[in-house]
Image (tube, rainbow, N blue to C red; front, side, top):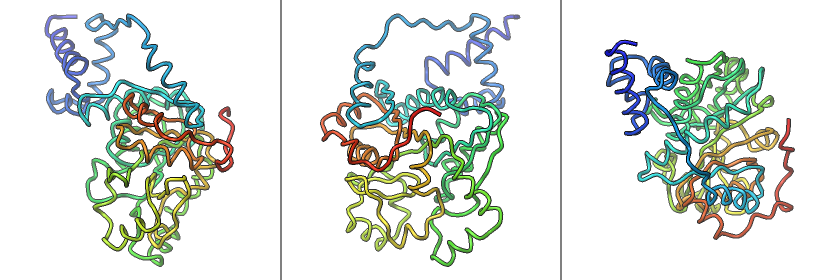
Length: 324
């Protein structure tokens, strides 16, 4: 390796490992594709430009994840150290979730992903997957393409041997008749039918009390008021939940174009990736719904969750076995 190549590898590695620059940021900074950024980072480790040492096991968080899984009635919890900022926290969660998601995928699986900033970060971190199908769990939300489910699956399909299945429809149609028109479109109908085959689903969690959700500003005052009258606490993939985990059915939900709660209940593995103590109530509500099997969160959120009432597994709807 010549000096020029060494300098490039060390510069990119320093920005990524020490300064927490994302692969997209590095691609723009060095005027190369993010795929080449990934290859150069791998080369930096192989050539000894970067070495990684793990000096000890974080027994506190290791014990915390076991206690949290038991408290929430889940098969597995992963707990990371909370980041110094919202973006840092999101990146830490994505880096913890990505290898665990990849590790569950087998040849021929159908993997569903919802939308939002956390899922976009996971799409950036997810390693190459075996031949499989990646599908949107919801229609698109808002006008920010960078956070859309289309962008999430595009990032993954660009570097894996996967079939990408998009749902070219809004998450919420303007009316029930418009929603039926979208659902009857052959391409959308074909995509929605694949939800019955989901092996893994990855979702973000939106909180409504306090309001930490990107959906809120996109709804009308009347829609928000109806949800609040129904006691909305959390949202996943456009599905609204009360604090006890029960699903809220309103006019808005009848206009939803997404995976259903029943379809998620039948999915062998449903992984929520969500952090911050402010979201603890929403995360607990989703756990009470019986939809989740796994959670990736941060230690501050975990501590807040453990202060809440324990989830009664016996009171949950039917759960699936963790093995496949």
